[in-house]
Length: 464
Ligand code: NDP
Image 1: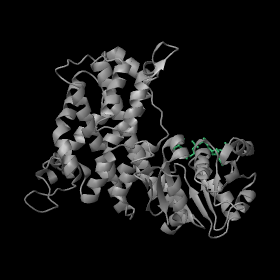
Image 2: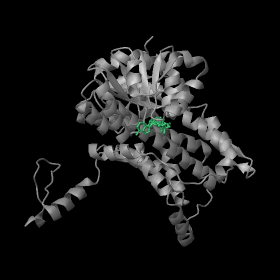
Image 3: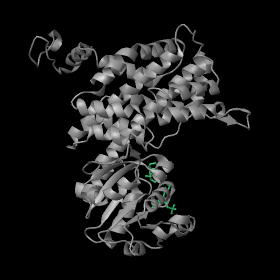
Image 4: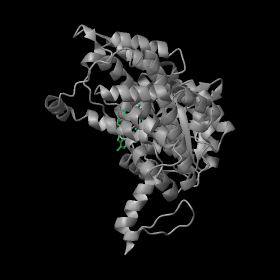
């Protein structure tokens, strides 16, 4: 029998996704650039093997799939995707569908969709290897008719929240990969803010890694319940036999990145959409990699944080401040999605996006339920002004402020939390300070300004 779908690229993600597809009772044909990888994959597939067809050439792959065909690419983003499409498309029928499921830059997906000589989808898949194997969150992009052709498979393999698949069509062309990029930007911010409160507990409160792990474990039973808080607790509690101490204490403090958070920050600048908390999280990773310079800075300035007296800041305030910071970074992310929706003429479904992120992906959390509700009930409002979240921010912004103020006084760097409170304050200040910027711009560049009492195109007395 012919397979219902094909997959190219049996690396970490492709192998997991192919197994997931077979596990959900779809017959799948697979091909990998290195043939031995394909053979090993099928050899180790166990119970799933009868549903998997191994192929050694692209021609064999194409011949093994029922028409109209659908073939998933799970190869590294960038040139390999273009090369693979170029090799595959001539072998396909006009109506066969190519699905790029890697982490493509959405501009590339826009281009590929425009250049495609046949059906094409770009889908964002989140949740790492575990998610791909047992249920990822899937953000689809491309012509709706092609999504509808494969949605039964993608929904079947996706994570479920209360029985509903976390797989949704987001819009045309690069819409799915765009939403995936913002997901990753929010992920950076979530991770960074957790790392910053960890820093307060470690350096400001002098707490041990395992005690900090206990705090995260407790927070994971409250409003902050999320995959990232959960694993942060586990990471903090892990023991390292080699050093006979907490594993966290021997991990080098330089964070890697594959660039998707950076794309979000760059795109936010193009869209002129303010996401300072997310941008700060990208900056923080870049700062982290400057280890030598940081050590030299500490030697020169004596930068090591000093301990924070208990009456200045409490663990409860850390929790409340983190709640506020989290709300603010999601507000930034969703506002950016809204901005892109207008700019790219997508109708990105904000409540659906919150729902699709609810399970399967790295940023899954219970708070996303309330976000989906708020975005449904108040579609035209920044999330921070939706009633449920406005109430929480009213209750918790002082705690966030306290963390940033006290932490800063004690020399603890917290770029993401500080940027988020700055965002909050800027977004609740009716009379800002850009009148000074406009005055300066008019002075040196005759850019003109608008007056509060009416009219545009004014100049100051320096104009002549
Ligand atoms: P791996 O490095 O594990 O696998 C890459 C796969 O692509 C291999 O099968 C490799 O084949 C194949 N490949 C590499 N270069 C080419 C090429 N030029 N032409 C054809 N095939 C090629 O990568 P991942 O599975 O981790 O990632 C795949 C995609 O999924 C990426 O876009 C990644 O960003 C994305 N992604 C990854 C996540 C993760 O947690 N790892 C999460 C979400 C998305 P060969 O065996 O011959 O080398």
